[in-house]
Structures are given as structure tokens and as C-alpha cells.
Length: 412
Image: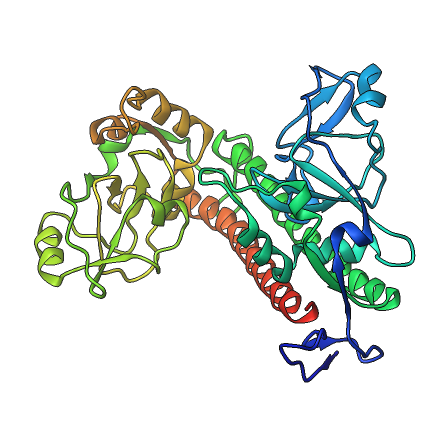
């Protein structure tokens, strides 16, 4: 690709393919597309029939057919779509709740709901593939957000959307750009599919391991002893964090709460003073090998502290101390099993707001314990899958950042 000397007045992208040059054109969407706004009376829904794509189905860049499954009667299809039937390749954009999500139609025979506008580039002027990525680009999304109205849910009228101008190059360059980003999206989809398959594999093999349908053998090839059943409070101590919200500082000692455990991100935290930390640290000390588990709001998400830690935590978290009775990584995996999660759910106070589980109830939950050697083999096997999932997620994030950077430079 070639970097151009762009100015604020020139309609040229910062980055473009070397075989293309010259300024882009700029016109209103209504001038270069055929569009249909499907606002109007909500069609009668049915249990089956023609799939109805709603604003909820349209994500940024693709249609999610699982997040919402609504249908209209086949006999109503012609009337509902009388303004224009959707074709493969047509571009959809949501006008409200959410605003500005863009996707291409990829299957035939669907219906479109309200809050969705269908766009089709006019022949020999605008290519649909380019149009999709142009509408996703920050050069369109930012002015779209600026023009939107509403306090609880931002939205834009179709009549206003059609007045919005976009810049575009010649058709050959449009096709080149669309092809490039399509290939990039395919790579992203492959990585996401790989991550999903790894997660499904882990879920299946974890169920096999903890139900003892799949067993490891010791290093000599012999069977391990039978597992023991124990309450959690028989093998460890459980604490909660401070009950008082501390005064936060710009810098200091990290302070963990539910969001850090659920996001598995312990870097972007709030901070407390060393005095507050030392006072709390005398009551309960967070150490490498301990497990933090959510117990208020979110219930049962656990994270193993596998780093040298100096931090305090809030009352919404339970601290499960490391013990010679178990291998910490094993217990961390066991907490996520269906049996343990079901018991947590049964012991949770659901009428409380937010819902919560008391420390005593956590301690009464049952844990199935093999000998330490088998615990270690199980944990290491599952942790190896986790590492593959994490590495795939890193690739996804890098590819998304790469795409985002290119979209900022390849459109104007």
C-alpha cells in the first residue's frame, strides 16, 4: 500500500493501493443508493415461517441469526416486503437501538423489520461490498452519532440518514478495498470459530474428566485411587473482602472487585492507600495460589491468583485460600463445573438485590477430590486448552486492532 500526502481539503485517504490515485467523489447516500426504510406497522409474528431480521440481529459487520429468532407468516411476506425485497449483498443499517450497526444480507428469503434500512448501491456508481465497509468506517460512524437524537436510545430518521454524504473512489478501487477487508473479516471469523471450537472441546472434556468417565493413570500406568467427597470448608478457609468502600487514590495498592474477576483483568484497577491495605492485610492476606470467586451480583466466577500479588479486595468477592488438601488450579477448574455451579445457585439468596451467597453456604458446597497427582494432571490438561484459547483471543484482538487502524486510514 501507498501513503498519500493528504490534506484536510483533499478527498484522498491516507493509505491506498498503489495502482490508484486521484480524489474521491462525495455524494449523499440518497443520490447513490436505492434504499428502503421499513418503518411502519409491526407485522404479525408467528412461530415459524419467514425469518424476520430485526435490529437486534444486526451486529457490526454481520447478521447474528441466533440472538433473536422471530418469524412472519409466509402468506404475509409479499405485503410486508412490498417496498422492496432484500437480496443477497444488500446492505442493512440500523437506525435505533442500536444505532449504526451495518451488515450485508448473506441468505435469501428473509424479511426485514422496523428500525432497519436496506441500501443497494446504484449500478456503475457504488459497489455494495465497499458500501458496507464505508458505513462501518469511523468516517461515517462519527458523523452518524453526531446527527443522532434521543436520550435513552439514540436514533436517526431515514430522511436524515439519506442526506448524509459519503466519499467513494472509482469502482475498481471500491472492489479492491471491499475484497481486502472481506479477506480480513474471513481471517477474523476463522479465529473466532477456532476459539469457539476450543471452548466447546474444553467444556466437553471437562465434563468427562469431572464425571470420572475419563480418567488419567499415574506415571507407571496404574489406576489412581477413588475420589473423595468433601465440603469446601473441610479443606480450606474462606474469607470475604472489606465491607467498607475505601477511599480511592490515583495510585497505590490495587483493589479488586467483581468486575476484575469476571473480565479476568487485574491490571486496570482502583487503588487504595498503603495504610488501608496493611490494616486489611492483617485480617486476610491475598497470596499466590489463592482463588477469588464472585459472590454478590455475579455468582461463582473464579480466578486463580497465579502471580505474586499485593492487593486487597471487596466484600463482593470470596477468597478461597490455598491448602495442602488440593492443587489450586484443579479447584479453580472444578468450581466452573455444572455440579458445583448448580449447588452455588441452590444456595444463593435470589430475593436479595443484588443476589448473593454467604460464605457459610459456599463452604458447604461439595468438592470431588482425587489424589493430588491426578488433580495435577487434570488441571494441567485443562490449563493447556485455556492457554490455546487465550493465545487465539490475543490473535483476534491484534487482528481487530489492525483492521481498525486500516479503516481509519483507507477511507476519507
